[in-house]
Amino acid sequence: MARPFTVSAAGDALITQRIASREPGFQRLTEVIRSADARFVNLEGTLHEFEGHPQATSGGTYVCGSPLILDDLKALGFNLYSAANNHMTDWGEGGIFGTLATLDRAGVVYAGLGRHLAEARTPRYLETPAGRVALLALTSTFPAGAYAGEQRPDCQGRPGINPLRFETTIAVDRATLDTLGGIDRRLHFSAARQHSIQLGFLRPDPEGITTVLGQRFTVGDPPGIRTEPHAADLAGNLAWIRDARRQAEWVVMSVHAHESHNGDYEQPAEFIPAFCRAAVEAGADMVIGHGPHILRGMEVYRGKPIFYSLGNFVFQNETLWRQPQDFYERLGLPATATPADLFDARGARGGFAADPAYWESVVPLVRFDGERLTEIRLYPVTLGHGRPRWQRGSPVPAAADSGRAIIERVARLSPACRIKWDNDGFGVAAI
Image 1 (cartoon, rainbow, N blue to C red):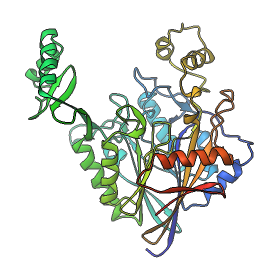
Image 2: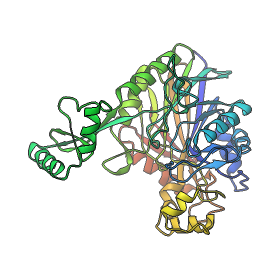
Image 3: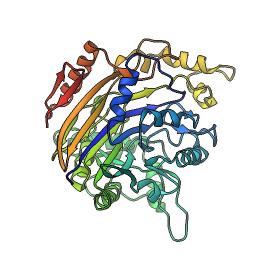
Image 4: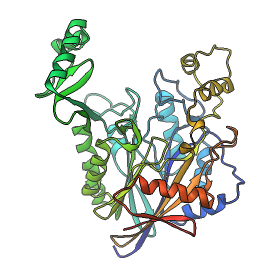
């Protein structure tokens, strides 16, 4: 591979209304995105005419936008779309099939969502003058029952997202575990679980693991919460990365993950770097993370960039015009309440609108010459924090002072990667 290849990437596009930005600089941001051969974004929500039914559990806000929104994302230049995230099943199977139909009609390359697990997990391919690009996408964050199921010869699979489940284990000393076990036995917290094991619906704990109060514990030092990728999901996704490596010149892996390290949402949980590095070892040229709606750090691993979260690119989670009654009830609102009442009540608790960190992002522009990574530029973006809800949420290039602060924040979160500010308005990561 001697040809140069460039990738631009954006984080979460939680997009629920048409993009008609007249902000100064919007066209300049579009030009940065469109300058690349492959142009990635995470489609954070469903695109259909309220098909299906709102589910009892969702990704938070029940996200649904008009299929016409995809025209705006295409006009921005995006040609690779992740459809694996915690909102893709907000409207049930009808919403899944409606979104699939929207994406298929538009003829875009997307990955991470399907009518069964194999369809959700397999790579999709984009043909560019710089070579063939494979896209794979998964999410570790999703409501119960949202992940796609495998087909069998005698039974159909289940529509949904491509999952990366993970195991959480809490390490404590022996005395603490004995104390917790005593509480569990006295109050019979595990009675239902033990009954399910006796009936054959659940497997007993593996050697060295004790489930107490609904959590997995082990005796270990130092104490703390440990996470690792689910073995079957890890193996299944790595197998398809290796397949893509043999089928395309370039392999892009998308990872949607909210999970944090010890409650610090700027830091990914342990299993996330473990998977991302394994993806590079299996053949991914670039791993693009998103999900927590805030920026996380990056690293260059074995000559390949890993972005742990690019934050929000479009964030229109307050301009939906239809939400289910379940959401209103959770906030103590009556059936006569309106969407504005709903979002006022949520905003009164603080939420996303109160914190400027949710309204800052970066758009990387990554260049390879042949197989060698040669440049990473990070273009800082702001989304209008402090404006009325109908005005905020669309991206524009950050002003010089705020742009430099955003890049310095990414640098602080990326101890393994030296990042400096360039006075032309972007950050540069050392290769």
